[in-house]
Image 1 (cartoon, protein in one colour):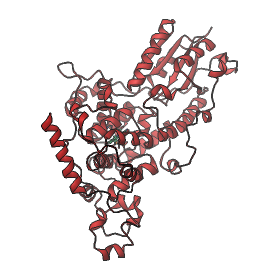
Image 2 (image 1 turned 90 degrees about the horizontal axis):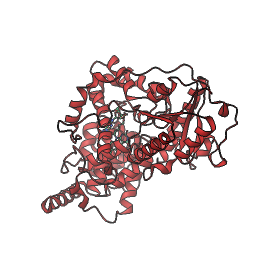
Image 3 (image 1 turned 45 degrees about the vertical axis):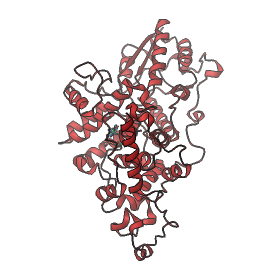
Image 4 (image 1 turned 90 degrees about the vertical axis):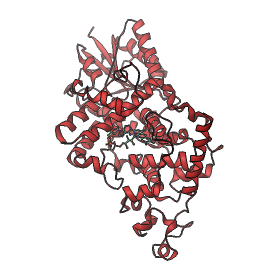
Length: 487
Ligand code: FAD
């Protein structure tokens, strides 16, 4: 009987630098690449609509890569352990390999599966395919997790040289197990192979029309995106990454999230191509830090890391009209609206603008950060529990290494500083295109004659601001002070 291994693809939808794949190839004569669809096992953070769009196309691309090498992707839907056990029985596989995920629900599930399979005598191995360092590898001198990024990153950068070189992409893959190749699988009807379309990942209402023009999910798209970044924006990254009106960052986030490219490959290519790469590698460091935090403080996807904020007096109940205006990019504050429209249209938002819209929601509107995190979760193609949690908690002022609560972004000043010519705002808020740049970030301050000349009628063609920025800032600071006084 030829030795058969199962390779379980999850957030590592690539063949390059894939340690689980390399381990599976070592000695196996037949290989079954599988994807198991079980969104309920990730509850309460099952992937959102934009992530599902990406996943559909990424699985399609992975299947094509496997077919080019003489294999293919076998998709099942259902309880992951039951699927694996059914496949083991059907193919007589003796080993299962996967790359690790670090979200709390996945850790619990994967540990249980590993325990069960090993108890059945199955070799079961997990590997690190998604991080530069495992979240438990970087520790303080007192053997504690870090809560401050700069200290974490200092410790991590001292060890960058230890990171193994990325492994190559196999040119040919072992054949599928006989039972699968011949179509004679012994699976029960409820665990039958599923065509990708049956996973229902694509939206029923086509709000995703613009996604394919912006993105190419899959490993080839990830490599193309990396090349483009290294050829262009990478060289001025430290400066241009802050400007939402130019393509100044890599836009690798969804590719990294789905593991279509690994951070080792990105690091190696950047080191080899870009002279001053420190600022960019530091952002990869924030990605590592986010996973480190979620791993050590798994409750933080739901509750603030700083317990003081558990009692923060958010507006209760959340006024639905304020939340809707924020979600739809109709707040009357141009930079906020531009960001929220970019998100809806393309499934992505510039990092600086993410911070500004998050600050606006949590501080000016006093709506809980968890509500914002949920909206991002559903609308971002790069929605990632570690990065999203860290980004929201940081901005709200309640996370690790957080921006101090009293530092409230002023979206008008931020717009004038980071989008001085108004390229970004004009693109996403075309109704403001003709406003002179002096008034573009605060149309309500423009004289009536200028508004008329520019074709802007506040409250008709573009909303009046839904809140007063200065008043709400003062209120937020007063609530924060009260909270501190009662501590
Ligand atoms: P680049 O600047 O090219 O950076 C390269 C890579 O480093 C990114 O692809 C990403 O993987 C990582 N990275 C960059 N900045 C950060 C950061 N601040 N924290 C963690 N990792 C980072 N990022 C996500 O991937 N998924 C999310 O769900 C997410 N939610 C966020 C929510 C809020 C409120 C905020 C403020 C930030 C969030 N981020 C999230 C972080 C950041 O905005 C994005 O990673 C970044 O904008 C992606 O663009 P890029 O690939 O061009 O980044």
